[in-house]
Image 1 (spheres, helix red, strand yellow):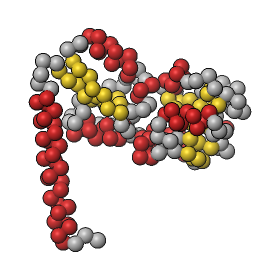
Image 2 (spheres, one colour; image 1 turned 135 degrees about the horizontal axis):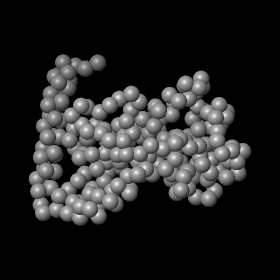
Image 3 (cartoon, helix red, strand yellow; image 1 turned 45 degrees about the vertical axis):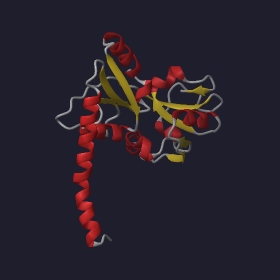
Image 4 (cartoon, one colour; image 1 turned 60 degrees about the vertical axis):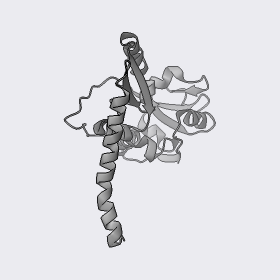
Length: 205
């Protein structure tokens, strides 16, 4: 329970941090006033396996006078930073049923099927298509709620519509560790289909 002094301090912090964020934004604008313009873009782990790299390449070729700086972070953080003006734009997943603030423009740049990843010797590996019910007894490897929050919300809502909750056995946040975990176990992972052409030969989608 907060003391009166602590409650007073807490009440002042919002204004302090608002001022700090404003100072950072103004400093970035001043730093970007050189001859080469700067664009600060965020992207989620899933977005790295989407249409984003091709779009960035095309933009870079078409606008060589613009310096692109990239930040990888969870979609929730990217959305907050774009809305606050700390990022110019972001490639991210939107939370289920949530649209960005009306002041923000947004554009669908990619859609992907969900794929299940498993090692090449897994009993499921020979099947071209799976039903969610086929995965009720299989352990799931997925990133943590803190880093994969929106992807987990979307996925778990899909499971809930089919009447069960997946059994999460491990929560690695980095994609290479997730892939290695799947390669060395009988567990599976879900990912956007954009990763399919980039998988090592011992992992099947």
